[in-house]
Amino acid sequence: MPEASGFISDRVRSACGWVAGRARSVRIEAGALAPYAAGLPDGADLPAPDPATELVEGDREARTAFVLCLDAINFGSGWWPTIRKRSGHSGYFTIAAGLTERFRDGGPWSAAELTELRAADIADVLGQDAAHPLMAHYAAALNDVGERVGADHGGRFATVVEAAGGSAVDLAGLLAEWRAFADVSTYDGRSIPFFKRAQIAAADLDRTGVVELRDLDRLTAFADNLVPHVLRLDGVLRFGPALAAKIEAGELLEHGSAEEVELRACAVQAIERLAAESPLAPAEIDGILWNRGGASHYKSLPRPRSRNTAY
Image 1 (cartoon, rainbow, N blue to C red):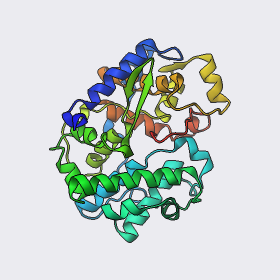
Image 2 (image 1 turned 30 degrees about the horizontal axis):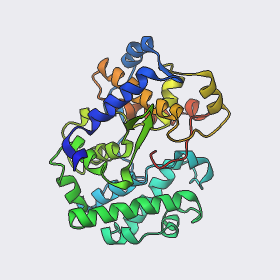
Image 3 (image 1 turned 90 degrees about the vertical axis):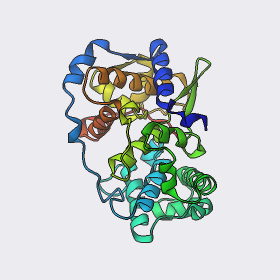
């Protein structure tokens, strides 16, 4: 498994730095980095796992299955305005709450059961319309998880974690081999890996106490659409006029377009540079900024949106 060699995050870091160095629509404001880093809170201020949207009880097998399933379907932000949201919940937390309740009330799906799930099954769990495009995408992702756990890990989810030997980076590399966690774009003819969900799954397994992983500091930021939005409003990223106009008009960005790749890559690179000015690791900074994005100031203004299965 070449991705599991321990270098996946270095590949993401290198590729994103390369994109940031030639980006045409997104710029990192170098002069803002040091003061912004100095104003970041302690990483210890991150919220604890919420039982309403995360499975915090149960044995290691069940909790591992939950994290792998949730992060396999941790995408769809471009569709959030079109789903049925629970009262007081964002799109992501609507999905997370539905999956949490399924695991808590019905137990985890087995690997074999995951391979049989269909869009209607997922829609029932999440309280959504079965015809919504996300439901078919979610079913396909969970089918792949079931197939890989069954074929490669004897049907045991905990064995997936054990195969990484305690390394967050190697666990992310292992997951990056699965179709469910695929996340590579192309920019100026070069392959640009992001692997947002493969990396965040490793971080989530550690954060929720399922397993203690070393080298979490080697993970990059988890490239999505919310963190670039926060960095833009906070003055760390600057968008070109054409890109800014599209976002402010609510236009969807094409996944894999130069503008969308630059958004993600420049956010990853900006967080790398913030980490160099801070005692915080890139994944910790990412968590701080993602949670900051839930505040009314950030939610009240249009953010970049793209419909894809990466984030």
